[in-house]
Image (cartoon, rainbow, N blue to C red; front, side, top):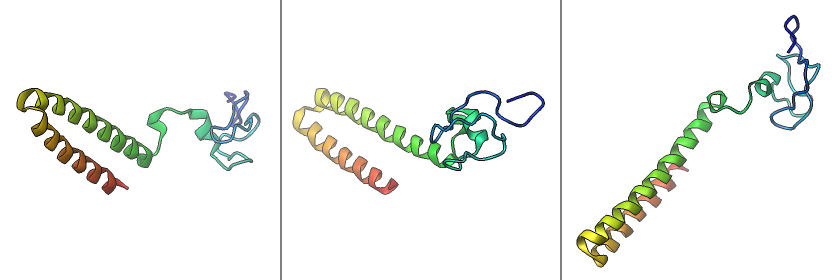
Length: 105
């Protein structure tokens, strides 16, 4: 962007469709997909993402971390109480995880 103007002065692709935004108003929209030009100038940093998207990422990470914790727990249970007891607990915990995952969507 030029210091004295409100137009894009360098080759900058649209973040959604790849259209070259050079010469367009910073407060305008991409003529191909209507994405705000300002959005493309900010980039793909997570802090610029919508709260809805960040919430979905948080849910996904929570499910992954829960799965890792269940795997570690199952290993500890196998060592501590034997194979059959651990299998029963892991099956129960896995069903609980599937149920909680289904409730997100």
